[in-house]
Length: 319
Image 1: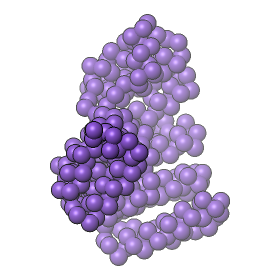
Image 2: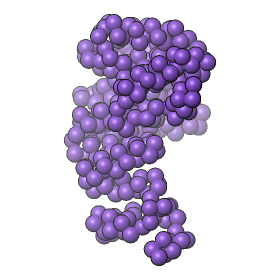
Image 3: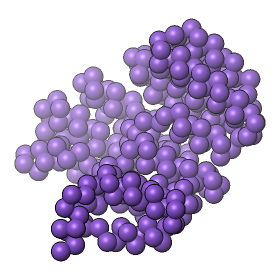
Image 4: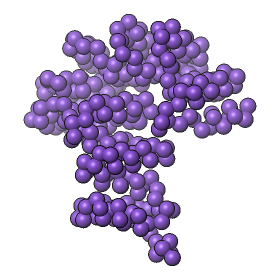
C-alpha cells in the first residue's frame, strides 16, 4: 500500500523534499520522512541529499555513515566528498579533511575550486582567503572563456594573498590551475616557489606529478618522482601510483613493475590501488597470467570502501 502512494514520486522528488524539510523542520523530520519512503526510491540521489542535510547541520557521525553507504554504492563523486570536507572544515577536523582529500586523489575524484576553498578555509586567514577567492574565481572565468593571458594575470595577482598556514594549499591550487591552462613555465615556477617553504609535503609531489602527466611531460614526472623517492619520510602511495598508471596506459608495463619493485625493496607494502592498477594494465595488454596474480594481491590488500575494477575482476575469475 505504501509503495502505491509513491507510484508517481521519483527519487529526485524525495531528494528535494529532504532538503526542504531539513531547512524548515530539522533533521528529525528528515529521517522520519525518509523512513516512510520505499526502498526503491532510496537511490544515490536521495542519499546525496541526505548527506548534504547532515553536512549542513554538522552531524558528523551520521554524515560519515551516509558517506560510507555512498562509497559502497560506488557513487561517491566530487559533490559528496565536498559535503564531507565541509563538515570536517567547519568542525576543525583537519586530519580527517586531509585524509579525505588523499582518498579523492587516490580514487581519481576531481578536486574542484570549491574543494580547494574548503581546504584553505580550514587553515587560512578569512580576509586573505576572500581576496584570494576573488582572483581565483576571475581566473576560472577567464579560463572558461579561453582568455588564458587574463587568467594568468589573475593567478599572479592571487599570489600576494597566499601566506602563513595557507601557503601549501594555495600553491597547490595554483599548480592545478596552471596545468589547466597548459602553462608549463608557470607550473615549474610555482613548483620552485613551493619547494622554498622548507618542508617536504607529499601532497605537493602528488599535485606536481599529476600535473606533469596531464601535460604529457613524462620526463618531468619521472624526475619529480625520483626527487620524491630520495626525500620522503612517510610513504604516500599516491605518488608512485600515478606514475604506475601512466606507464600502464602507455603499455610500459615493465617500467610500471619496476616502480613497484623499488617500493618493495624500500620496505613499503604496495596498496590495493597499486595492485589494481597493475591488474588493469596487464589485462588491457592481454597478459592474463600477470593480471590474475596482481588481482589476487589487490584483493588481499583491499580496504573498506575500495572495490576492484569489476570488468577486470570478472575477466580474471573467468580466466
